[in-house]
Length: 263
Image 1 (cartoon, one colour):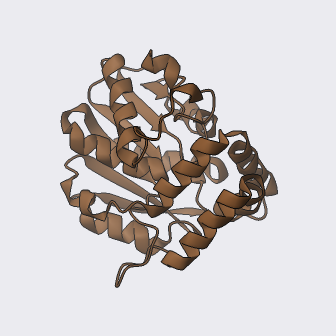
Image 2 (cartoon, helix red, strand yellow):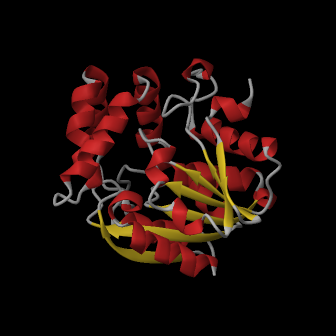
Image 3 (tube, one colour):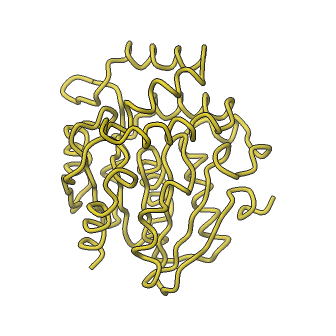
């Protein structure tokens, strides 16, 4: 299977350096539409959809390959290999932040920088680590998803988005969730919310920027602080933004922080 077709890969932009954008759970590459124009003239931009989302080929999905985030990291590396990309600036939102971490550990020479937007290595509280949720809360969330995915999507999306003054953004996120392949979305949710990548963070050798929002219901500031502390040499910026999707709710602020890091 052609990986570029499988993941609906699009290549735009005019620059020599490459930026690869990886969307978060339940989304697709359209979620970057407010960000990419700011980099169009200076970078080659690679966009793609995770399997089961957007216009990817969901027929290529298998539970064996995608039984952990490593399967999605393998997709990222296969895209890079197919396009013969080197010195990639990887931009990952939410769960794709950890997917990028795993890819960079596997092939550190492939990436020049990581930009992790609202990352979380683990959503579950564990001793002194505050991931934002108890295990019971996560189990309840996943049970709700399994029993009524569309109802769950319409309920959880506005919470994830935040920014109650912009209800259209929560509606857009809910719509994106509802367009996803239900089987893949359920499986990916279990992997996303139950993964624990804390031990992987110290293995990252790529220069890393962490973009953190306030009032993030999914990844609180304590999580951003943890990621920053455990990736050596990383830089963390607390954006003047709320919610979990600043690429949609506060694109100008997000772009400014990214450009400051890249320059």
